[in-house]
Image (cartoon, rainbow, N blue to C red):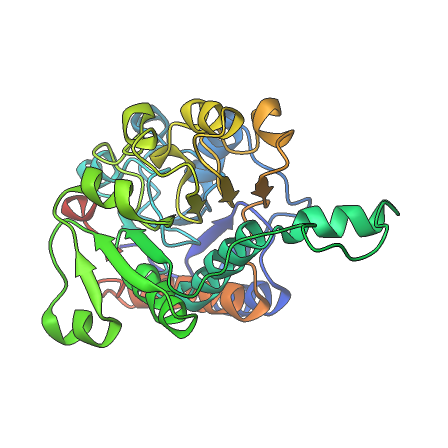
Amino acid sequence: MPTGRLKIVVTRRLPDVVEMRLKELFDTELSSDDRKLTRDELVEAMKRADVLVPCVTDQIDANMLAAAGERLKLIANYGAGVDHIDVHSARQRGVLVSNTPGVMTEDTADMAMALILAVSRRIPEGLHQMQAGEWEGWAPTSMLGARLGGKRLGVLGMGRIGQALARRARAFGMSVHYHNRKPLRPEIAEPLEATYWDSLDQMVARVDILSVNCPHTPSTFHLLNARRLKLMKPTAVIVNTSRGEVIDEAALTRGLRAGEIAGAGLDVFERGAEINPRLRALSNVVLLPHMGSATVEGRVEMGEKVILNAHTFADGHRPPDLVVPSMV
C-alpha cells in the first residue's frame, strides 16, 4: 500500500467535474489531448502510477503488466466492461482491478430501444431522404417499416441492461424472451412476463428482434456465428449495444446483404473503430459510434465510481467495485 497521496494517471479526458475532483483528492496526471495511448505509452503510464484509470480503448495484456514494474497497485477502469484488461495476470502480479457497474444501465437500455425503433421504422433512411432533398411527398407504400407492438424481443444476456430493455419493450407491447446462463429468479422474471429459453438456437429462430446485451468473454466470442445468424427470420432485426465481438460481423454483413436478415442497429463493432466498408454501405443498417453510455449524467457517475474505488483503496480497504477473475 503506497504512503502519501496516490499517484493517479488517467489515460483519456473525463468530464471536467470528475477531473477536478481527482486533482483535489490525489496526485493526478490527466490526459491533455484525449487520444488513444500507444502500447508503449500505456506501459510508461503504468510505471508512473499507483492507480491507472484506463477506459475501453486501452488494451492491457500480460506482457504490458509484466513490463509495468512494481509501483502499480490498482487499475480503476472507467467503464463496466473489463475484457480489454487481463484481469487474471493483473491479480497474479498483485494489481487489483475495479470497474463502474450499474451506472450506465438505463442509458444503454435507452439506446438499445432507440436502435430498435430506428431500424424497425427506417428512421435514418427517412432522415437521409429529407436532408438530401429527395422527398417528393407522402405515398401509401413509401418508407414502410414494422410495428413493434405484438413482436417478440429476444434478449441475449438478461443482466441489468437486458432487464431494463425488457421493461421498455413491455411498454411498447412486445413480448420478452431471453437466453441467459441461468433463468432469472421468479420475482424478477414475472413482472417482465419474460420467457426463458435454454436453447439459444431455438430463441434466435423465433424472435422478431434480437438484442445483444451480454459481455465479451471467451465463451461469448462469435456466439452469434454464421450458423446461428442463418436461423433468424428474414424479417428479423438484430441490435447490439454490448460488445462487437459477440457477433461474427462478416457473417452478419453477408446475411444483411443477402436479405437473410432484415436490418441491424449496431453501437459496437468487432474491430473497434475499423468498420467493415460493406457493412457501412448498407441502407438497412444503423451504425452509431459507441454512444450507449454517452450521457452527461452517466459519464459523471462513472467518474464518481472511479473516485470511490481509488479513495477506498487509498484508505486501505477493498474497492467496492473490485473485479475478481471468476467474474470474467
